Length: 159
Image (cartoon, rainbow, N blue to C red; front, side):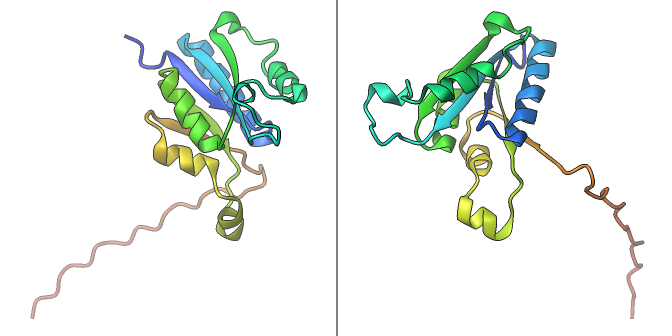
């Protein structure tokens, strides 16, 4: 029995999601898993029921098709687009396709930016029915994590 047979990777075409796509592809190549490459987009102004799964903007489809165009996954690579709130769409598609893992990039916003823009990754971490792996695009100049300071335990004082 394979632990990972289907992986869903969400992309918003950003640098952090590009790194997540590369990671997901490598994972699928090594495990022989299928890869579902997903782009969730905001509901278009001219929304129709058929437009939910088939976007009006052909540039989105071309952009999605260009990702992993030279991949060795072949028939094990599926590209999906769906209208709706990104976090909800990602969780639902992972469940609907019985994915064992979700891989997605995170921008690593904190504080006010996080409050204003929210976090799709946080939503998916909270609501997904399968494990979620987040890939953060880190600045190479970011300092290393310092070694934690561990202090000796003080012996109790008896009176």
